[in-house]
Image (cartoon, rainbow, N blue to C red; front, top):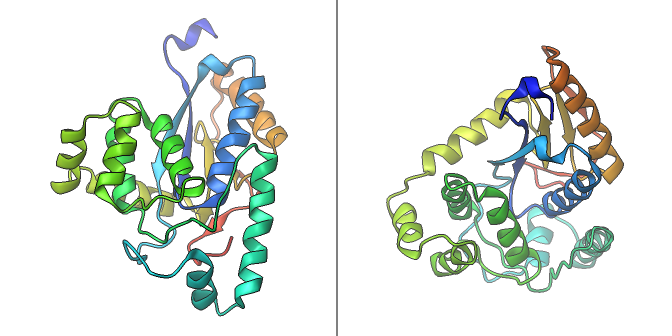
Length: 244
């Protein structure tokens, strides 16, 4: 670590929705890149809230295939094939997706849980447990009891989880981060921003994250100033129109 930087870290901010399949893949690819990066101790990841579809119900009798087929006007088999392709992409990243078990639910409460976790430096742990619960275990992330169970897995207190959800303690934080995304031009997620200089949009390959880490860290050490955000848009992502 450069001695001039003191205890500061290079921030990697990630706008993400825990119901976005490419966000989990992007997380894993970024982590693989970070594991190869010799200055990983200089990096701090900061997860930011984003909702692809705020209008989603908290629960639905339709499965994910039926819901998206109706929503997008596609055939059921076509939707299943699209999800099979995503499942295969996830496997490459070492992830197991079980879309047959996925439950349609609104992610807003889950984002409030993430905000609580962030306040205790457990944001990354919260993202991981929520992604796994949704894509692998098929849990309803609008259900308070489920969120309590998941929060406890990362050492959050049951009473505090119920309290912040009941009192809407972190609703403002969620809205602020969504607004911040709009201000910097985020149209789809995942969206990784390195030191507010470089952005990687989508679940890009490990080498893309690695090269961005190298460049951003080099300039962070040299304290170079860049006034505009340079965006690499080549990764697969989900946008607000539910295009994945």
